[in-house]
Length: 259
Image (tube, rainbow, N blue to C red):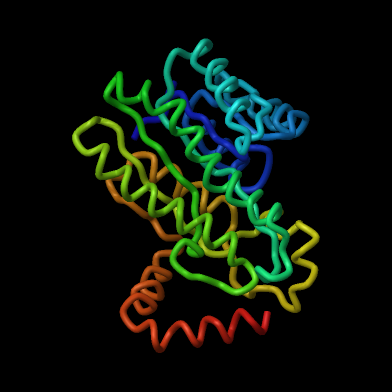
């Protein structure tokens, strides 16, 4: 797909996957709306991207707040009049067992990871449907297919994202609008900076770069597929888990409990 002059909105754009995705789209000549809670970080990124001679709009917005998302969408549509690609990337996890986490901590993950996606889709989808074009990219995780101890509430939010996306894809058939989920394994970002991850006794030996995931997001923006799993071999592990759960689930549980 030629992304030149396309209007692309990225949530969670202040760091990690979101920031790298903005860079990759900017290289292709796309105009960007950068959305995150930290305006100062967004402005720094916008300054970095000026060299690409594209239009950039910085929007400070907490996607877990539906009022803020509604106000943000009004600003975007007033300036650009349309949106070609929506990348729902904002998300975070708090490490800890369900018995340890507070209800507020569990709810906060669902509000950002799941409802934040819904708020953005509900505000921009009508405009995509009206012009009969557009693509939604939801950044999930392989945790959308595995219930893992220690990040149970995060897994729940990503399971919900994948299920919502699958149902919506059916609804969007023949509308000109499509949706694709990008599900990476562990990524080298500030995802693990939350203090709760200090409890983890070891690090994962294999993780992806944010650039690898960002390139998959660009691929997803023009893909008919429901889900792109990164790296592709992880799809085989998911198939094994779904086909032989009585063999795979005990191994997964044992491995993650030792982390």
